[in-house]
Each structure stands twice: as C-alpha cells, then as structure tokens.
Image (cartoon, rainbow, N blue to C red; front, side, top):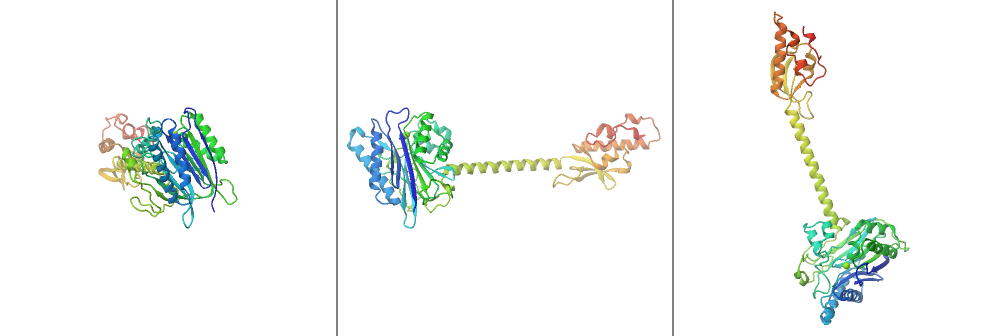
Length: 437
Ligand code: MG
C-alpha cells in the first residue's frame, strides 16, 4: 500500500494584484491550476476547475481522473458562457492521483496547459509533462532555443487550456510509485523565475514538503516574482511514513498524448483524444519501461551530444589517418638496400602501417659513399621530395668521382659535401669534410 506525504504553498508574487492560481491537495489527489481572464475571472476559472475535478474524481482510476478533467473543462466552459463578466476565462490544470489499475497501484498524471509536473528521482529532476504553449511548440520544432523561449514576448500564450471549448485534449501518464520519489506540481510563476537546477537543489535540501514549497516560492519572489507562484510537493513514503530516501528509479508505464494540435484555434476545437494504457488509436501506448523516455528534452539533448561527439571523433580519426598516410607516402629518403644505395618512398623504418618502398635504385654502392656520409646513408637521409633525394645522390656521386680522380686541382673543402651542405636532417654525420682527403 503506497503512502504519500505532501505539502503546498501559493503566492500572489510581487507584481500581480491577485492570485489567479489555485492548488488542490486531498488524500490521493493533487493539482495546480493557473487561471487567466480579466477582472479576477482567472481566479474563478482555476478554483472552479479544481472544485469540479475533486468532485468528479470519485474513484481511484486513471480514466476517472481523465474524465474528471473533462468535467472540469465543461464546468468552466458553462460558467464562462452563462456569466458575461467571466466570458473568455480559462485555466491550466496539472494533476496527479494515486490510482488502482486493477493489479497494482499507479500514479496517474494529467495535464492541459503550461503548468508542470516534475519528478525528483535519485536526486535528479525530470520534467514529466510537456507544456502546451506557443514557445514550447516552437522549441519542439527547433525554431527557438530554451534560452529564447525563457524570454520570448509571447511565452504566456497557451495552445491548450480548460474553458476554451467543449472538448479538450488531455495528456495522461501512469507511473509506478517508488519510495523516495518526490513529485512537484507547479505553475509557470515558479519555473519562469527559478531555473531547474535551483529547484532541484531546494527539493533535495528540504525534507518537509510544505517548507520546501515555501522555499521555492521565496526563490521565485527573490528572482522577480512577476507572476503568481504555486507549488504542490508529494512524497512517496515507505510503510513507516518516513520521508524520501531515494532508492531505485521511477517508471512511466503508460503515456497518453493526443496528437499535438500545434497552434491556433483549431487546436482548441479538436476532439478529445484520451487513450488508455492499452492504446486505442494513433500514437502507440505500449507500456514504456525506463526513465529514458520520460524527459524527452533530456533524451534528445543527449542524443545530439552523443552524435556530435561521435561525429567529432570520426572527423579527428579521418584527419589523423590522412596525415599519417600523406606523411608515409609523400616523403623520401636515401638509404641502403643490401649494399646498394637506393631512394625510398616513405619514412626510415616505416610509419605505423606504411612500410617504405624502393622508389629508385642508384649506381652507388654503400662502399662508394664517402666515409663521412656513410653512417647517415645507412640510417636513411630524409629528403622532402624525390628530386631532392636525387640531388643528394648526385652529390655523393660527385664526391666519389673526386676521390677517384688522379688530379687534385679541386679543393675538397670547397666541394659539395652532402654531409655538410645538404643533409639537414641527420645529426650523426660529421660536420666537416676533413675525412674526405
Ligand atoms: Mg502563471
């Protein structure tokens, strides 16, 4: 038997004249409503909706909860139509309830509008509900960023609300109650003022749900308090009634989301699209295991980050491969194949998987190479191009001919010596030509 503990708080904020939010906390049913409409009509709408919701939720079932939201919508529509002073009023409604699915208990969640349900599980905050607002739609379409949405001049425009039309699209979820989980229902006056990391920190820090609610409102007012602020915190307790002791993670077992109506009045007149966990039509509603599917914004962010990371690795890998291949195949050195001096393509000793190969043979034997240059040639004298390697070999040939010439009219010290004037890469070759004589 699941036990719940809860606390709540609501506040007018620092700018508004009246509080048009309403909260509901009964034994097993919890809700937040954010009303809209001039001359306190919003206040009427939010309270009327929650009264109707509570009255219609007469047995603990998910379908009963969804039907209760439809009942609340009808109540607001009817009142709006019959009282000219309240025409055009509407309200958001976000609610959760402990229900019996027949074989187990579950936490049923319903949402219309841009009030939110968050879940703090294992210390991590997840947004469970999706906002039905203009900026949320633009964000889901990738047309604006979260940062742009937070300051968008039309961020208060809703795409769904209770009281606008006789039918209403309702998102619903079923979640497994897990001891230690903490739920937060709140109006936009909270999350538009306080970022989610600070909300999570307060929920982790303060065990008492009422005190935590008051702290969240204090933070929103400290930021600016431009809107009404409402919080309902619900803790899933163990059998002894102890407070949250995080263990395990929560699971959404079903999610019913009518196809997104996107923007405009057409959205409001769409037929009610409530589906059960078994699914009736449209979007499949097979049981969803794991939190991975809960915070859709989080999972999409992770996906993009992973793709970006993998893409960067591929580009880096391709660059490294290309660099090694180019270096291993576009450099030359003068070395020895057996006793023959040859020109190799590649690096002395090879480079990773690229072995050097003989590009050209020469008429020189290692024994014909001047003694001063012999060690360098044995190890391999690198040259940037094939032409430079040929020049180096020609210089070696010139020196051999000078050594074998019978006359000594040429001063060896002024001759072209590969070991001194050409070889830029080896340090083992003697720096003078004194051994030539
Ligand atoms: Mg608000």
